[in-house]
Image (tube, rainbow, N blue to C red; front, side, top):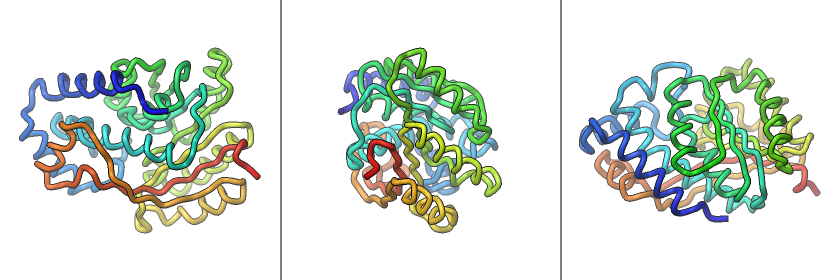
Length: 266
């Protein structure tokens, strides 16, 4: 299902109104160049200052990376053949909420959304994303790895009567330590065994993700799949303009995914 165009337009308009209130487009483009030179296409470590340590970087992240993340997630869900179904989406390490909002929008009417993150600004931004897009969503401060998100998702699903839970990690697992990542894999596999749909999205990078082959084998053994993608995006005009001003290609995108859903098992 295609995301609601009115909701997407309202979100972009809200981003521009808030983040360009005190900054010019040229200032945001300079901040985007600095942000890109540090993180390139991978997500900043939200537990530190990183991507969110200045108004310019926060604006660049929100106006450039977030809309691209929304568009990329929608594309990946489509290519994976994920069903459009009433769903409770739990977005772990939600950042500005773009990826989770994309899945909730794709899932369709009646879907709900819970974003979990450790960074106060990211939580506020995710709430603004859900509100602007008209989504039934909430964002809470919490840990990606302590397992409490599983109880949160179950409670919301029971309250709303959603038939299943979707669990999303978008550019999150590569930022964790090995010790934190190891139990997370077990939690995701257990969630899938209990009926959840699980999607992991990461950059294509052996350097940042030496753990990926082990996760891919685990997902495949459980009946899931792993893929690598290269595709073209059609982001909003503001995102395109910022990318070009910063010397980036706003249309080119790559990603790799892990997908596991009990209904897909042969």
